Length: 62
Image (cartoon, rainbow, N blue to C red; front, side, top):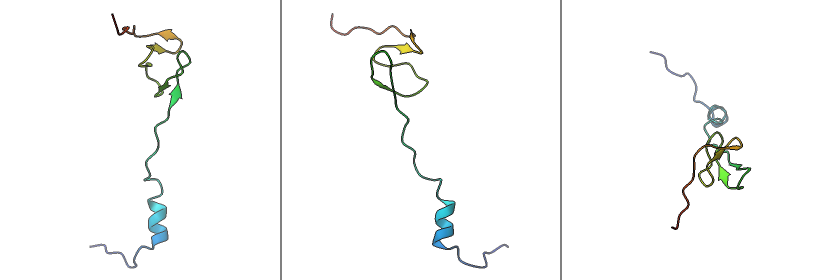
């Protein structure tokens, strides 16, 4: 059975784990209403996607 000959140093262990960090979500802003939106998704506040209305948004109130 294969067994490591030497202990893995902290530096080598850290280099291996350097890509395991969490990435923050990429936030863009809607050109219509300037609300934050995740990329490649319809804006939840105005319903626009790529310059055209994709989903009609219901107006609250009446």
